[in-house]
Image (cartoon, rainbow, N blue to C red; front, side, top):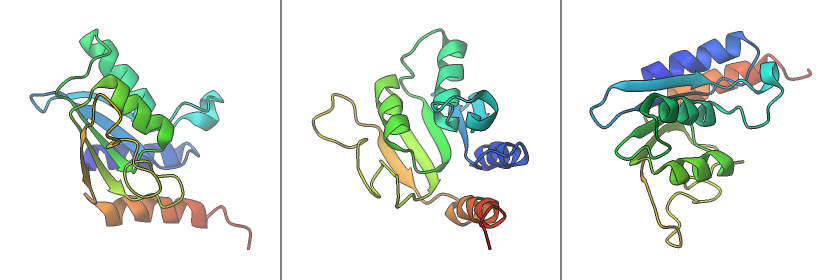
Length: 145
């Protein structure tokens, strides 16, 4: 999670919402890392999770990330949760819950929907305070007073 937090801080320094993600292989090796990149790329899908999943798939030369772990600082949204399920990751580890858009149990629970053919394990609350603090600090500087 500390690697994902480093990516979140790097994203914030570029003016992006501070969300970072890493993918770990079945052996725990770091396969990919990414931070949000929507503003720079003008790409609505450039969430940290999507970028990290794409990089890991390229590293492994396979869209199937069987046995891999997605570690992300913020609970995945519906798009990212769906992509994680489609990539067949074994588990998703996240820091801060997202009560407004979270799809791993807070607002929706896409990841554990019994109708899907793959349901990754979900571990939440890892370094949640640090993950949440990065987001609060980022948005506090952008609020109109």
